[in-house]
Amino acid sequence: DNSQEKLTHMKINQWTMGLAAAGVISFAAVAQAEEKPTHQVLTAVSSTALSGYVSTSVGWEPGRAVNKLIRTFQKAGDQFSLDVIDIKLSSALAEGEWASGYNVELWLGPDAGGIGHNLTGNIAIKNANVALNIPVGNGIQAKIGIFDTVVGYESANSIDNPNYSRSKGWSIEPTTHTGLLLSYKVADALSINAGVANTLDGGGNLNSGSRLNNGQLTYLASASLTAPDSLGFLKGAVLTAGVVDGYNSSVTAGASAAPDQTLVYVGATLPTGIDKLTLGVAWDHLNIRKSTADADALAIYLSLKTCEKSTL
Image 1 (cartoon, rainbow, N blue to C red):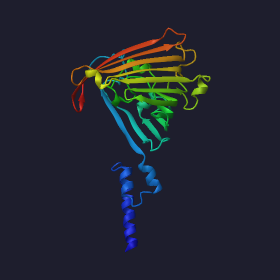
Image 2 (cartoon, one colour; image 1 turned 30 degrees about the horizontal axis):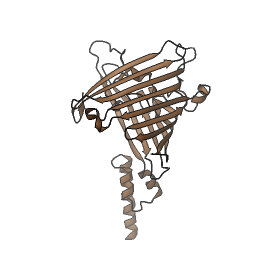
Image 3 (cartoon, helix red, strand yellow; image 1 turned 180 degrees about the vertical axis):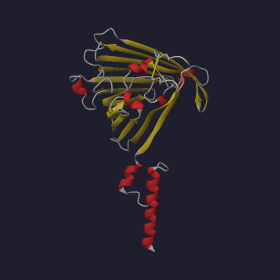
């Protein structure tokens, strides 16, 4: 009878939601299976994307100490390691001139201790921001909250880097900031970023950055230029330059390095004219006020795409 049909439909929906919670199917598929797509809970869930990754590694040290002078982020030799569990929830910008969205990215595991914005030693907030489209010109994308820095050839995410270990430049760059970031696409070939944040680094209490530095804010800017097709084999080459100037909260009082610092970055990815062979170059300069401890790092990357799933 009709009541039995309703009960069967309810059981099917409960089973479907269980599969979604287990990761077997997507929440969007649950919303499509529901007879009434206007259901408030399912409508909200269907606009949210859940993603992430797990990073693990194995280190082998064949009878000698690993030279860490020219690279960082090297794990101990002769062991298997869990690096980090990345969990991301996001809602893309909706339709309309004043569209909005959000992005939340959490790190769990040993590497979370080095990213900043720590909740505990092994749990950190990598990103947590609200995004807003401002209808000016081609559209200004505004982020407020915690976001990734605008400088650097390498990323905190190992999967985005040419190597698992990282250059010395990565160790002197900021990773994340708490503040406001504005992004604008001037043309297909040119994009710019500008922002203001509490601190140059991602350390310190999540909401105490401006008090830690006695009100001194951090300013950041970058520009990225992409070569057009008219440049022949150089088409697609990307040149990026940026600067972050402000207060490094990880510098303790009385340390030899001053907390007032400026990081200047220039990097490029260039085709070589040889099929599947790409050249990368990056330079970082860290200027530390009232100190002789300035740092420079130069890195060169050569990448060969050997097949669809492999790069050397």
